[in-house]
Image (cartoon, rainbow, N blue to C red):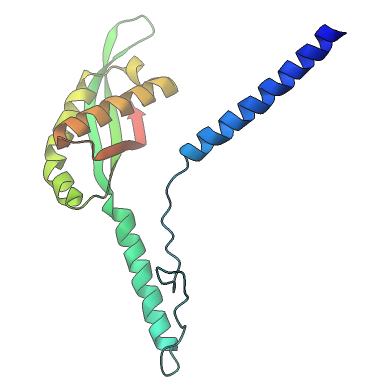
Length: 180
């Protein structure tokens, strides 16, 4: 009976400790969101909605400006490469090599640091060259399955960081990957 009581107590204690550790880990990996609430001053006071007059025309202009700023900030950390088409080696059912084509449509996501946009646009041709060279070395089995796609993304990111000369590139997004 004592052994049963001790095992239940240790399981319960282990569960509680695991839950506490999970909550601490989850808090440490929580993203740092910037609170961009409209009309708030840095000290938390609210700005008046209407300064003078009826204020309706000004509010509409402010909404349009904030939408344009939001769209620009979304595009700030994104570099599109378009399509990369290259020939790769494939194998038929008998194991004989046969030609195939690989079509990739890539988007590079980078940190929007000051000057990063200019650097990424300047280094884009070098990145594209490295991406094309890597894609030519692939064969059909290299891009098969989720593990293959993740490996391709990791290799492309490694080459993007090498071409940029920094860790500004954060992720490679593959919108199309077609083997024909």
